[in-house]
Length: 291
Image 1 (cartoon, rainbow, N blue to C red):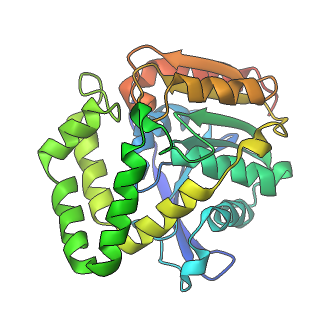
Image 2 (image 1 turned 90 degrees about the horizontal axis):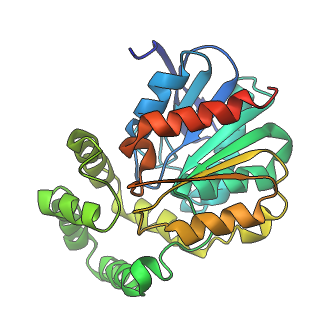
């Protein structure tokens, strides 16, 4: 299946920050929000499949890749990202959309619903979380402790830690370790996709990444879950140690009338691991809804 031709553009968001987006296909609109530091290639298999019958829209978060850095770092947070999504809908004259999120993108999607519920027709939440994902990650507090240590080191030695950041992420060993930790399934996901992700996250301004990551850790969207009334599909990976099955089951319990699919052998990127299964389940979900 070939990729549908894309149209690209930028728009000025609420604070003047220019946000980059891509549009493909024709039909009911689907907007896809990726994980923190990720790229739109994390949605490649879904874009290729769904742009045959839908309008697929991807965009870069502020301070990510082809979008601008905000003039004020006070506008580098989840609320600002949610306002960017709303501005994107306004720019494209879209009344309601199917909003998808992967990983950190689920926090973003839930915050968009919280702020602009009338603009959301349905939600697709993949390997996501709505509160601090570092707490208890891998069954311990090592990840949280490492982040605090790294952030403190960057405060005193920004150039040194920026160098270490780029060097470590681009190291093939680091990619292997991320896979072993449940971030990717190297038996199912193309290594090229993982390398593209590594290059993308290494290209980010470290200060911006840490600022947004800190905001991600402090945001708690659990109270919003009980208020979500739109059809919601939740997809998780049974081999995901980053956002494990218990996290997906909690989302399922708290979101009324939600559906849950746990993908066998799925890592933290089930949409890359098993795109055919994920795409089929999403298509069945969307086909059951009048749009």
